View (cartoon, rainbow, N blue to C red):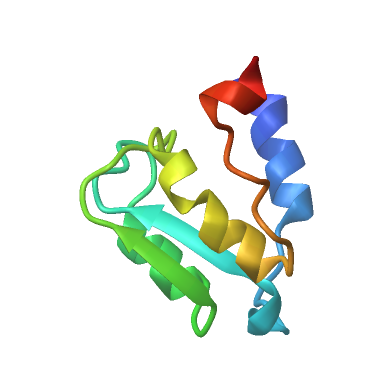
Length: 86
């Protein structure tokens, strides 16, 4: 990350969120970059999934995809079966 990247992030920053119902926070207690407690404090009242352990990349994101899609009002895609994939 370059210093200009931090400046770009700061320019996008807001003091406080105004419509928490529009946010879905996925935080991992094992995040090696951001402290999950800071995330919880910064986004009070939002729909939150707290992963015990995990990592910053949320490597197991696929496990939460259905929840994310439901939050967005979307249906998950049909499950791929071996016959459908052929």
